Amino acid sequence: QVQLVESGGGTVQPGGSLRLSCAASGSIFSINYMGWYRQVPGNQRELLASITATGSTNYADSVKGRFTISRHNSKNIAYLQMKSLKPEDTAVYYCNFGVRLTGWDTKTYDYWGQGTQVTVSS
Image (cartoon, rainbow, N blue to C red; front, side, top):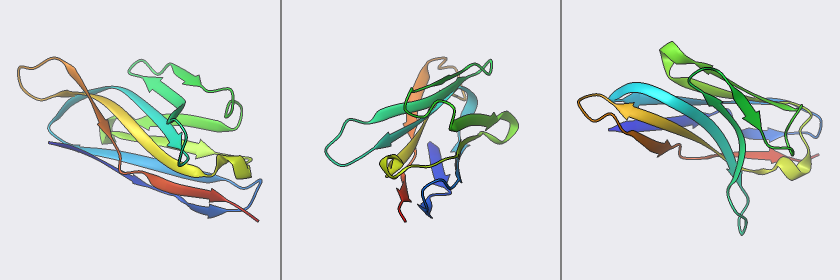
């Protein structure tokens, strides 16, 4: 009923920049929170950045000062602007939205994007 589609991944040189997008569609009443995660094979999925419905943001220490999360509420889109990329940023990046569905159910449900590969290499 809700789909999250990610785009913007690819290969970039160290020090470069990349912007990821995550667009939600479906039976959405509201999006209460948005987050970006990444995962390397064999590792735990890591929360990088989040933004609340009020616009408050939080960042992991590993990306603080380099990555910026933002949102376009009317379009149900989250962005992750990544700058000063390092080889250790190489991972699959996932978006995660907390969604209230249309109808009488007022609970928030988590939905995940399909993942997009980011590779930082010279």
